[in-house]
Every structure is written in structure tokens, then in C-alpha cells.
Image (tube, rainbow, N blue to C red; front, side, top):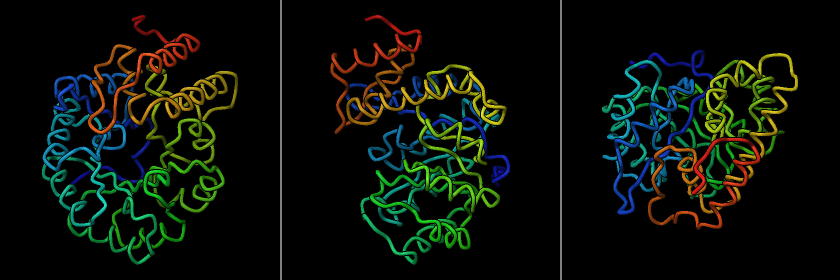
Length: 304
């Protein structure tokens, strides 16, 4: 039985990339190296097979193997969450069962992707079925640009009544939505910020941490962001907020996700590999845009 719950799901919980070789094979040694690097930065949890991990390209077997590889590195020191999202509930449940059997501490699951809308009955049915199939705690993942619609607050309330939801990764880009979510649900579940430029205001208003892309580039400061966000606002917080905003804007505007994130990780010396079909690696010109950003932010990187 997983010991992770709404009270200890917190802090820096990065979603690790899946490093693929040029032939599309997973480079498991490189994956373990990335997980270890994130642990040394102060990660308080690891998400595998999520958006950064190109989950849409992964088989059930690969998700389980990545879970086991992450657990091999973390050795129970921090929880490992596995993305189990698929459009069909049946396939999502297969992913969830495989992750459970592989030893995952929790699941990261979106509403039904690509359907573009879902009734409250369809949403509650999905998460109730998953909770019946696996006893692992669930982080529900709201990402309107991925799913095609936003999870409404009334829908979330209904889902909490039927499923083992301990937290939410909130990736809505409208801070009005974040504000109302924090006001209504911060006592009922752990709210984890998605967009990294919302980390400081979100945590100040009651979020417990973040499952965001970009803080890794700050090095060990990533593990201290939650503590800083809870402190008195000052120049250090504002400078880090501005830096995170620039990182997020750049990563979201260059190439097809997550090609830019993999490229920038490679530039700073991490073995992120290349994207998997159908996503293409960045061009030289696109990579150079990221080099310029790293130079401007004074983040060490390779010069070739």
C-alpha cells in the first residue's frame, strides 16, 4: 500500500523525459542517470511516462519498465508516479494495473484525452473505474491544451467523491482558474502547479508544490523553490520567477513538445536523447535559440 497522500505530496516533483535513441529504442541507462540527477537536485517525487516522457508513444510494457527503472534509482527515498492516461478507460486501467504491479507509488491520470468534451457522469465513471482496478492514489492531471477541455471545479468535486484522488497537477494557463481551485480545494487535496511561471504565486496562495517543466534548469535551486515561495517576497523570488517565466516561454515556443526540453537538457549535459516518432528533434537554428537563452540566463551549457 502506497504511503503517499494529500499531506505529503509536495515540493519539486519533476516529470522526467524518456531518452530515446535515433532508432526509437528507450535508453534505460540514460533514463536512470536522469532520475538520479533529479534526485540530487532535491526532487520530492518523480513522474514517469507523463507528457515530458512522451507517454503517447509508450506501450504498457514500456511504462512498467520505466517505473521499475525509476524505483531502482530512488530506492524508496521518494515516491514514483506513473502516467497511465489513455483515451479509452480500458487502456488506462491496463496501464494503471501494470504500473501497480511494477511497484509505482501513485498514478498520474488525465480525463479522457482527444474526446474534446466529457459529461460529469463520464468523468466520474472513468476515475471510479480506475480506483476500483488499482488501490494506488491518483494525481488527476488537468491540461486543457492536451485533453481538449478543462476539468471544471464541480466535476472535480464529483470525482473526489468516487475515486482515490490525493492531488491535482493543474496546468490550466488561466490564473483565475488556479485562484478558484486553490480557494475551494486546497484543504481537500494537494494542488501541484503545472506552468512554472505560476509556482511562486500558486504556492503563496496554498499550492503544495509543482509538477512543472523548467525548474530543473535552475539546478539545486529547484529543490528550494517551495520554501522560497512560502517566505517573504523579495528580490530572490522575483528574479527566479522572471527566470522561470523566460524558460517556460522559450520551451513552449520552440519546436514540437517535448523536443525543446530534450534539446535544452542535452545542452546542459543531461542524456535526454531525441524525441520519438512522430516528433522531430530541433533544427540547428532552433537549438541555437535555446543556447542564446541559456547564455542570457547564465546557465552553463555546451558550446557546440
